Length: 420
Ligand SMILES: [Zn+2]
Image (tube, rainbow, N blue to C red; front, side):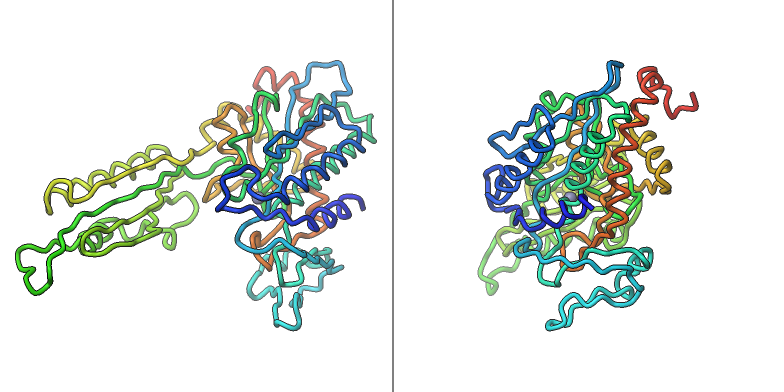
């Protein structure tokens, strides 16, 4: 099957992104891979193929209809996670999985076991693509790329499926949070798009955290401890007091679903000066704002206890929940759900406890929910993807294109999915 051959070819490219680089793309392997994909899109005779200086690759599958059909897009990312090497990936297909442990690397004793990863048992009887235990697999997001390109090819060889103009884009550096910034939404020219970058088959996401970072700098006064009485101010202890003032149950390790948190990500300091860094996360904008206000309030408490300007707070918003941009165009989600149902899946809509490229894009004016690739255990050696899930993802893309055509009038009237 071409879909799987494509995927197995793509993972041979080392496209690990580099957090320490300030260039885009952050690693040369991504450009190399983008150039390879460009030649593949040329062979498929897609149109308007452009690869820009930052390794953003765009292409068009032209409409095969004169009707006024909304232009939609599909997006996936070129890079793999900096968390684990993406070099010399040597995948293997476990056919007709029997539900037992899969030995990834006999020498190192690395196994993919349902006792640790019970989701394996949802895929008994399927064909699983796994790693050799020495690298990640790169299904995140090369599966997304393979699924999009294969769907475009399918639509090309099935001209009986009437469709509007389809745009595709492959972007660098998603894993280091830079993927959406240089995507040219105007040039992409879509009413809406989908990132194909999610996990387990059936997943659909259009809600993510609102996110801010906080940096607190505590000023102390250092004196020789032998002569410190009444003079020393230990900034470490004041910082510790601040940590104790935040609600102890509102931490990542105590929260799930729609529960937000304050996450202490760093402490450094000495008697003279201490710095705490936090990230603040919440799906609800009001509660998100309340969390930032709480930080300000506690800063005020510390300054009234220990003297003005003992602590300085710097807050920065990082990204917002795309829900507020997607909800006014809810047909975007309804269509994806309908496409999943049409190919025999039950859509699993869940909030992302993090950010996505689609969130940034939604705020740049391109509503952009995230659809599954089928991959599981991203960013590490236990990453795997069932062949059958990849096929479903490709089918969902084709089906979305079909539904957008069939429902074009309802979409323009914005009645689709609203019981109309
Ligand atoms: Zn991804």
